[in-house]
Image 1 (cartoon, each protein chain N blue to C red):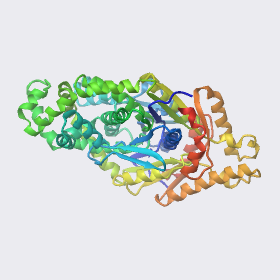
Image 2: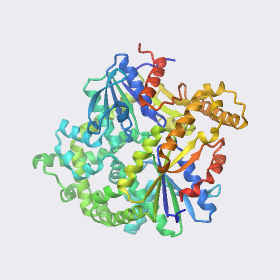
Image 3: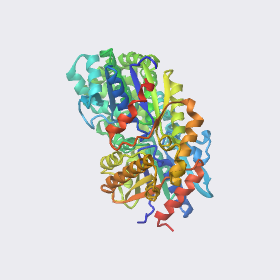
Image 4: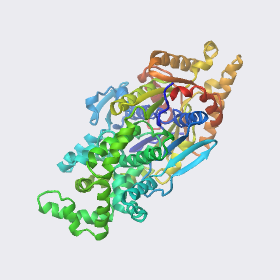
Amino acid sequence: MTLTTKSFEIFCGTGGVGKTTLATARGIDLAASGKRVLLITIDPARRLKDLLGLSESQIGEVIPVEVIGVKLHALLMSPEKTILRMSQKYQTPDLATNRIVQILSKPYGGMNEILSLVEVQMQFETGAYDVVVLDTPPGAHFLDFLEGLSKIRSFFDQNFIEIFSYLGQKTARAGKRVFGLGIINRFISTGVRKLLGYLEAVTGGQFIDDFIQAVQIIYQSRDAFMKGLSLQERLKSRSECNWFLVTSVEQGKATEAINLRAHAGHFIHQDHYLVLNKCLASDLEAWAPTVPNLLAVKESLLGKEQDLKGQLRAVFPVVLEFPEVISLSPIEHLKHLTEKWKTYASHR
Amino acid sequence: MDKPRRLYIFTGKGGVGKTTLAKAFTRCLTQRDLEVAYVTFQNQSLGERHGATRDVKLNGIREIELDLEDAARGYIEKKLGSKLIASWIVKTPFFRALVNMMPGFSYLIFLGKMLQLGADDPRLILVLDAPASGHALTMIESTTNFQQIFESGAIFEDTMKMLGRLNDPEYTKIHVVSLPSLMSWQEAQELRSGLVQRTPVAVEITVNNCLYPLVEGNLDELPASLREKALYEQQIVSEHREQMRCVLPHSLGRDAASIEADLLGALPNLI
């Protein structure tokens, strides 16, 4: 089995399984074959930083790095920096200064997934890269990432677009002044006015006002958000995207990977691969322990790994196995995994 | 052993055995004749699943699965005194956009619902199987963030109360679960320091699934990869033992029930 390189290579999985390291190794292998690679991680644990030798101040910027003698670019997502880049690119300074947008774009403010979609799109548009390798947030949170796309769509749904295209004209006329609840009340339907009235009782009037202002400001940057939608089509296309679902023997669970596969069904096409990390079976099979309690250890570990592989192979057409690498040095670890990717690749 | 708290939050990267541990801990408390429930919720968008909060007794432990729409509707109903209006509000595109665009908002709704469960039944202990790493921070931070966002109104008052509970060391305790590998350990510490910056409650790390206690004394008999794994685990644990609340050995059990049974003995340490 050989892998074909695509414009987007997406790694998702259950977290704590070596997903970031495997994505980094894949990026290094692609770069070593001559591709211009950008590696993006939105994993909040930011362990890629250590592997790539990046400092805290470089987070959120595209940085040229050299790892085990291979050159590539790396970007550790920072929602604030993405907001800043958007506000510069689309000339919407309010986006970077609005109170609600600021709070929401804090590292744990909750807008990571949506902003990373926008970031991937903005970076790919530059034309500077052949491949964008994307390391997604762990576990079911990857689904948020996909959901991010539908959230963009539902956010800018018809009702909103009507309200805000009207507001947009008003805003333009008034020289970018932002309108609050008062103005909106004058033209929106009775239904919406009623709704806002009820919500005010719960959330306080100031919030409704602020939220509408934030929405308006976000709406000014809608082009950037809407472009995230075009990314969705490309990720669905077999010729543009490879999907890697990563799990590990240590984790011992097939259910999460299988659930992920089922949930992401309409996004994932034929070219998806299950990556099984930290396999011990070949060593265990060759081992003949004499002490009874070690025999129990062998049978338990081997049995669990075989059960897992059986469950995974029943669902995934291709399972790529990576052996357990015990090494205290992350760089040594990375080298082993890069070598292993080479054996699966067809880009040479 | 400490006096039992009212809320235990289990967090950590996926695949570290958080769910198994949180369920076993729930059983451990249930066996001590305490009233306790295992609580979980799915990260979901409004309108994606509409359902009810699921509250069932499974294999002798109480399990509650929260539902976002149900929790939001319940809250609004309580504040406005009308079920009809609450049902309508949660279904409007505006409200869905409001919640879905700000994922932290759904955490606030879940946390609010959970603390409500705790307030309704003053004896009930809640064991929360929280979302993986970064999201645990999103969850904890959602209270502070939204407090800043709301500034006034009913939610503001309630967020203040929520924050009070989450920041009360007598009420809440957080367990970060890790595996005995350097990366997992570093991530657990990173998560712990992130949490400690945000809340004054106890945040303790438990290292799960250690192979070395099972093979100690027989290291020479092991194949190279297992021997290295055991030595490596031993090194990490011995270097950082004082920062680990609990170190749990790998279970040879092949199914969830026997793995849970293996864990039970050590779990009173987590109370």
